Length: 127
Image (tube, rainbow, N blue to C red; front, side, top):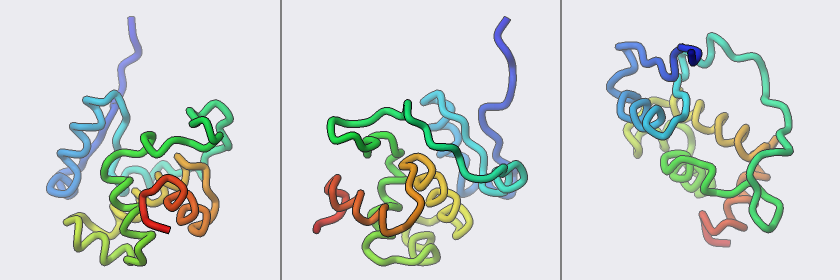
C-alpha cells in the first residue's frame, strides 16, 4: 500500500495567490507548500545534489524551473526588486521571496551574481 501524505497545502489566506500554482504542481507530480508553510518547516539550505539533471554543459537545465520561476529569474536579473516583481506578477512579496529561494536551491547557486550569469548563459536575459 503506498504511503499517504500531503503533496500540497494552501491555507485559505493564501488561496487567491497560490491555489492555481498548487494545482499545477500536484498535476505535475511536484509538492507545493505556500511560503508560510515552508517557513514553518525550513531546515536550512538543501545539500549539493550531484544527481540533479544537467545539460551537456554540466549545468542544471533551465527547464528544471517552472514557468513562474523562469519569469521571476528574468525580472530579478533585469533589476526588479521582490516588491516590483510581486506587483507585476500579481503575487505577494513573500511568494516572490519563496520562489527566489527555490530557484537558488534548484540551481544550487549560493549568490545572486551566479544566478545572473546563469540567466545570461541560458539566454533568459540578453548579455
